[in-house]
Length: 151
Figure 1: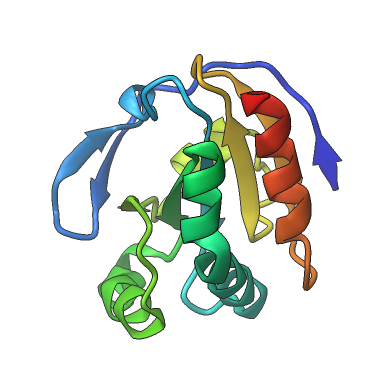
Figure 2 (figure 1 turned 135 degrees about the vertical axis):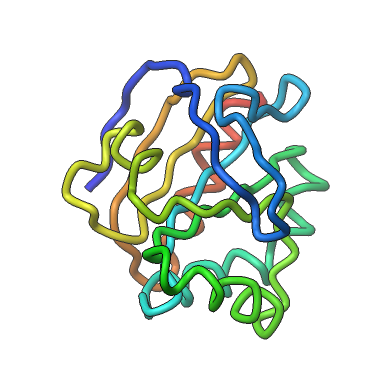
């Protein structure tokens, strides 16, 4: 399911996997688009999606300047599993945030809690694309949307 929407990022305080507090309204990429990808350690499609994107991420950055922020929706008692998962998979995404109560996910329109949930934010900080779920190869659609924004 994909739908377009125009909204600014909400202001919330989330911790990253190193314990630093980040205000979500301040997430940006120097005027270039960025992707926010919600996942959970137990979500197999999420892990497949993040693995697939990791394989092409360097190419995406070189071509479009896009950066990716991943947000764990693991519950508080499981947040200690997030950093080991990220390290084991070798995911080198810019930021890994923790959203154990789904507050940020819900604020970005994911009221069902379905995962993975992917949002593209344009260079002006507006949400321009949302997508729920993952099938193999769906990352190609994601980079196409980013390419449209950087033309």
